[in-house]
Structure formats: C-alpha cells, structure tokens
View: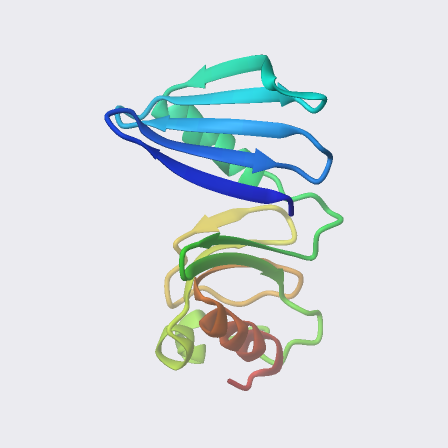
Length: 165
C-alpha cells in the first residue's frame, strides 16, 4: 500500500492523505458532522484537485463497505483483512478438507478458545448470514468473516481449518 497520513483539523474534523502506489493522491476529509469530502489530486500537480465528491454519513458507510469488500469480494482474493487500530476484520474461506465441517460455531467454542468473533458467514451459494449464532453449521467453501486482534484471527482460522487452536 502507498502511504497514508492523518491530520487533525480543529473545529472541522480529520484529514487523511492517501498516496496510492499508482501515483494518485486522494484526500478524505471527515467532518465532525459526519459529512465526508473526497478529493482526487493530479499526480503531476499535487496542488490541483481533479475532482471532489461530498457524501453524507450513510453514503460514506455504504461506499466504505463496497471498497472494503463487505458487499462484493473479488473472486481473485482468497482472504481480505481490514484493520481498525488493534482490531482486524478478516475474510477467509473454509478449506474443503477442514476437520470442522458439519460442526456448529458453538461446538467449536471459537470465541472461548480464540477470543475472536465470527461476525458473518457467506455460503458457497452466496447466502449472507450476519451475526451467526452458536447453532450455525460450518460448511465447506463458506467464507467466514471474523473480528479480533491479529493473533486471535490467526488462532480462529487455524481452529476452523485444522480443528486445533
């Protein structure tokens, strides 16, 4: 990933400057009232804004979900992670030979053993199960969305795919 810089804007909110690997620069300003501005800057003139979009809070969250893969995950990606300070959300597929296939989340005691939380499950048929309960059965080829710290995520992935913590 390119670089990301943050700056407080007193009385306004926070500014994020993203220099992408492609050479593009995007500046996102998050206003204290929830409005977001996205500015795209010219790679040959970092002072010249090519375009700007203003989004309200709801629109911003939807765009964030789209960009983050919550709405559609490209088929080329086997796993994805999104970091929020120490917390991470990661998507990964259940291996076809995983020893826990057919067992429930409750039987595996994933939260108790790893301190990670399964926040969603997407079946091979693309059915989305948000906040699955302990009775949810782990199915082959499903994509599991887990929330936790990196070590907890790794332990939950190991538990799901090998049956061991």
